[in-house]
Amino acid sequence: MKRFNKGYIYSGLLTDLLKILPIILLFLVRFFLLEGEKTADASIAVILFFAITFVVYFSCCIAYRIMYYKTAGYELTETEIKCNRGVFFRKRSVLDYKKVHAIDKRQNIFHRIFGIAILMVDSGSANTPHQAEITIIENSKIVDALINEINALKESGIRTAKDSKEEVLLSDKDSLYHFTSKKKMLYTLSQVVATVLVLTLFGVIAIIVVSVCCTLMFQLDALDAVGWEQSFQTTILISVPAILFFSSASFVIFMIHTFVRYHNFIITKKGNEIQISFGFFERYTNTFSYDRIKAVRISQGLIQRMLGFATINLEVIGYTNNAGENRNLNGGVLVPFCKYNEIGEILGKVLPDYIPDKKQMKAVSYFPFISWFSLIFGIITVAVLLQTIATIMIFNVSASVITTVALAIVGTAIIVLVVNVLSSVLSYKTNGITINNGKITAYYGGFIKNITVFMSKHLIAAENITTPLRQKAGITSLVMHIKTNVISNKIMVHIQNEELSKEIEELLVL
Image 1 (cartoon, rainbow, N blue to C red):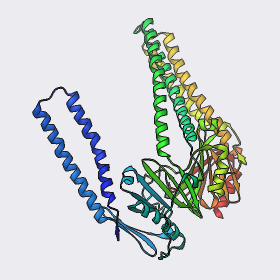
Image 2: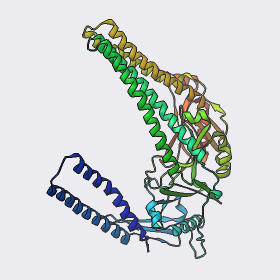
Image 3: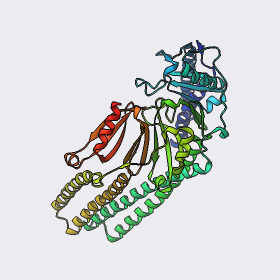
Image 4: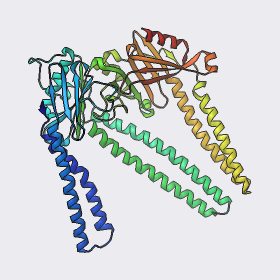
């Protein structure tokens, strides 16, 4: 069995060093600068303590890395991949070539320094959804050759000496999609605008709350007119700069994150294999077969929807945005940002079977989208209003105070209802479904519009959710389950004709 590349030890030690240094520096700065003057003996004692702690910690790291290196290894046999790893708890994994779902290559900046990469081979098993079965740490060029070889072995299932080990060289010219700097800036701006809208909403609510509190204190003679005016002005002076500051900070953070994370974004397709590569400090290369795809999900946030842009994600068992992260959290990125009218062209190059069909069956009624929320929220609002007024009246306060508080509660309720009405309108316009030649295209969502395209052969369960009144009207909400990274991923399309459920059930029988 071949051992991992020695570069693992050195890159791992650099990572360990990077983790401990900020803690040491932070404590030393606090000790010498914030705690006043220290005697020479005290300073020497602190430095000695940290020196000993550092030596002990780093010695443990060195010992662990060396033991991991000596106990870890991998082997490609005629029919399967074998991998050993672990120090205190040894783990031996065996994976048949034909059961490989996805192949992920990860390479951070320390790995690049020592010319190594991490190869993660996943079977998509529900027993290990949070990690890949096989982990190999090797020279970057060897990893590229292993990716090619394993991809070939997925089809044949038997390894021979003639298996190809040519290195895959990726470049922008090879990519089927170009994530240009202009698109990255637009992607950043769309995220910032969404953040600003949320901050502004909270700012308005904060101003309303402060105004009501100041008015209440003024009526109770706890605050004079000058104090009320000053408090209101202070709230405005704090809220507006805070929104501007966080908006500017969000723009810088999002921009850096976008340009670093999606640096040199490349999509290539070779036969039945698709490879997606991206990242600056940490480079991810995800490889999977076309037939391993369970669904394609197109998402549009409110701002993206207004501007005509979208994000395309994949549901592939064993492939996520970040190789090695918990695979129950999210799907894998296919296209981070593109024009909505470009989706058909992009999918036509990469995944022609998953081009979304136009909506055929739409939501049949608007009222159910808002009825239950309005009823429940209305009852809660009335209960809170009556309880608050009754509590205030116990203290014999003036009618103007009661009116102010009541108006504040009603005003807040109106804001919430307006937001819900907007979400309901968007949901009503979005929800729908199309079934065409074994392909299902589901439209759903409110402020965030989603379009999920999947084959009926990947449908594993279906449910109807209705009420007696909706059942009389012949309408229902349909829940479809497909097997993905979360084992049973739910796709919910609301307020459809009840006859649609029978058509979905027939697909399950087939």
